[in-house]
Amino acid sequence: MSKSNLVSVILPTYNGELFIADTLQSVLDQTYKNLEVIIIDDASTDRTVEIIRSFNDDRIKLYVNETNLGIGENSNKALSLATGEFIMMQDHDDISSPSRAELQYKCLVDNPDVTGVALHVKSFKDTPPDDIYKTLDNYHIDKNSKELKALGLYHFLTHPTLFYRSSILDKLDNYYSSKFTIAGDLYFIEQLNSVGASWILLKDDLLAYRVHQSMTTAKYKKPQIYREVLEISLLLVRRHFPNISDTEALMHAKVMARRELLEIDNISLINHFKRILALNISNDFCDDTTLKKETEMKFRTASILSNIYSPLKAYKVYKSIDELKPYRVSFWKFINEYQKRFFTNLTWLTYKKRRNTE
Image (cartoon, rainbow, N blue to C red; front, side, top):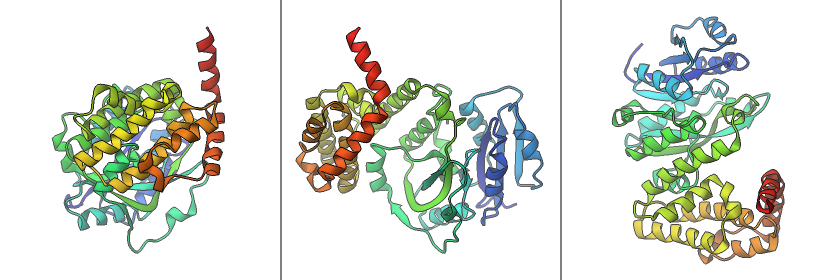
């Protein structure tokens, strides 16, 4: 096996007996064959290890922890054992298209100045969508690094789709942090970006993301998810705009984490989004058009959540930033989204109302 152009597939596992066979098979079926599949099982109590050992493929390197380390430290251990020129992330419950590694590898070869490649994903519950299995003769770049910086101000790259040059890891003192139980993957991406990682996003759906009750985000309470996303979002916005004030940074983090938007006044909200647009013009940080499109979507959500009991007031706020006018949705589309978000947040709204009356 040649170390040159070798792809190290990082596949941490824990109690994944229901899904690991399909996931591992999807990795072994890659059209790009120069792989090492590094599996670190984090002391599973089910048949995960037994199922992995039933596969006969010398590219599999299985390690079993005697005690449970947690997903962060388990992933760190896997990365420390990787010897490939490239790293491909793979969660133990997702399905990769057979052409995934080949196309992501080709994209990096064709773009030597780029650190890594991320993908769009298709979510599924029972059966993976058929269209991820199609044979692709070429790849389609959706966003370049400048556009992705605009996207990155409001969104995170999808961690299990990452494919990147392992050399970027030499710039990090640590990879995943045990401090983040749920959002450690978001922290890791922010760490990579903080040392200069640049990305390309492919529009091709080459990963099927499985949604199920035992997935990590489903096992923890939403307040804990909120706190972790809030903290990582603070790191993100300060990297984008080093001169931003603490108040502005916290406001942006709340926009990212969403929950506290239910308690933010409209004037502060409007001023914040205007400030972000102005900061980008003065810093020329990212693609302005992409940023305005992304800001429109976030501002739409923020307007609704901040005025969740008053749809007309929410729409009036939504129309208040002139720079976003070319990208606004229609009134009826806005109201339709308002209704969905009202019912989605009904539990939190009831709790908030009860708390305010106590």
